[in-house]
Amino acid sequence: MGKSPDDMMAAILRNLPAKTGRQVDAWVALIRAEGPAEPKACARWLKAAHGLGGATAQVLAAKALGGIHALTPAERLDKLYAGREGLRPIGDRLTELAHGLGPEVTSAVLSTMISFSAGLKFAEAKPVGKGRIDLGLALGHGPLPLTLVKTADASDRITYRIPLASVEDVTDEVTAWLARAHAHAARG
Image (cartoon, rainbow, N blue to C red; front, side):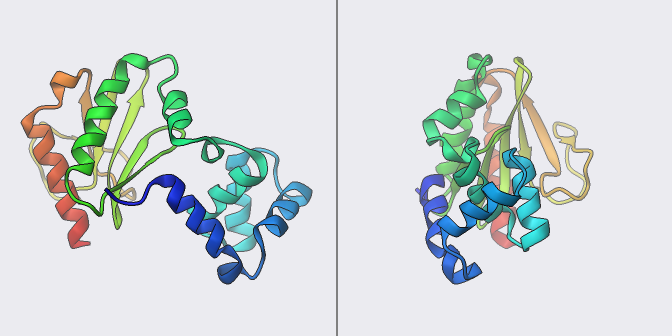
């Protein structure tokens, strides 16, 4: 299995001084003195005002202010599925399938989804209300079968989605589409 989200966050913090010329404690002090108090707004501010990348900005905002990235992976999963625990088996199955595609696959539990990457993001499992998970897939913009739903935002990597209401909906066809998205990401 690839690096865990905690490993990636630790690496971001460890490499911060070399990349930015500022120690983690100095960033935390700056954020608390000058930045917005809400983690998402703070991450946007760090990107805009200080030119940080998105992952670095999110990790620093969480370090300084708390937020989803300050939680353990288990706590992030609990928060993601709070009030919709019935969807968790679907997400767990998708995570298992994604990690089974290769040792380079990583997953990150974010505030609204689980993101799957293999160098590039190739899929996401996003709870939608209490009734389903949308499996988003990065498959490019070519015409694909009608079993996939085209996403609205053409600028996003995720171009198609498959609504899943139960573990039984995670069929061999869904598994094949997940593998195809993984292969598409591997080609770049």
